[in-house]
Amino acid sequence: METLGVLSFLVFLIAILIFIIATIGWIFKKIKGKDLRKWKKTSIYSIVVVFLSFALLLFAGIKSTSASSNDESVNQNTTVSVSLYRNKVDDVTTVKGTATPGSTIHFKPTDKDGISDTVKANKNGKFSDEYLVSGKYTVYATYKGHKSPKSQLTITEYKDSDSSSSSNDSSSDTSDSYNATEGENNAEKYTYGDFVKSDDWVGKSYHISKAEVLQADETDGQTVLLVYTDDDPDHTFMVAYDGKTAAVEDDYVDIQGVFSKRQSYDTKIGGSNTVPSLVASKITVTGKDSD
Image (cartoon, rainbow, N blue to C red; front, side, top):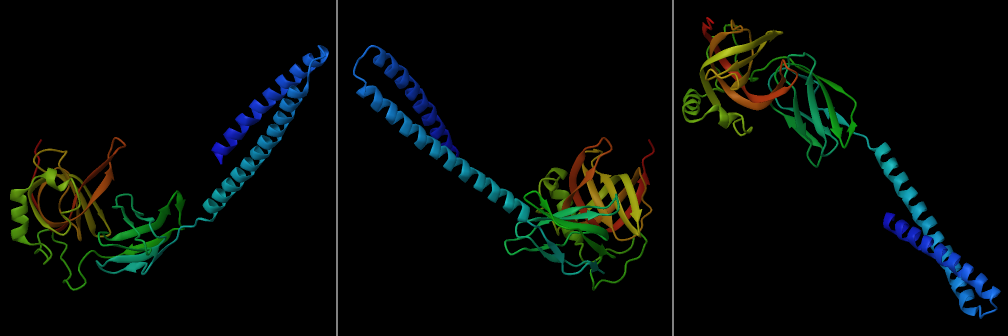
């Protein structure tokens, strides 16, 4: 419709120009007493073209207004919804729900030190997330610039429903989810650069024999550590642990755990950093940086 409007406008201008030229020519011919039939025809044709192009302009304008109105109506009527099957989860289980098909579901922790996550709803509107640590979350969906009403989600523990309750001692036995052989093999074969690239490592065991604590946060009996390996602060891991630890900033720790999805956190200089993350089964303090 935009092309039709432009073409109609150009024809309209040309027709007016021809009409003006024909009229001026007709006046001069009449003054000189010459034959006026040719100029009369030209004037009549140009008037017809003017009216036709004007009609096309009106038609294109009406269609454009109608299309714009329809687009606005569609945007105004687009609503995004999200619904959780359960708003409270008492152990580590998959958080499931339904939302607008194709929308992005956001899990935002109410605690500033919590770990956020996002998942996509499939074409049927179903979604699931298996990688949320314990805590309280605000949940909402976004789709094409629209946002759903918010829901609240509470996860009270981070452990398998059939596992025994863990001790608060950071050197307690590892859970069945950690495979010692796999953890050692992965530590020997792969480097930090392999883990930071993708989430293909989710569910695999890993052993960090020496890491230095950058930051330690404990909330409601749960611990989140930022640690770095290889004496390189750029080789940072985020570690979630169900319990309290003795680890504090500048401590050296030994960590056994299982990879979860990569996580992002805000840096002190106002940026964001995405790093590999582990759900730890065992954290042992092995020393302290003396510098």
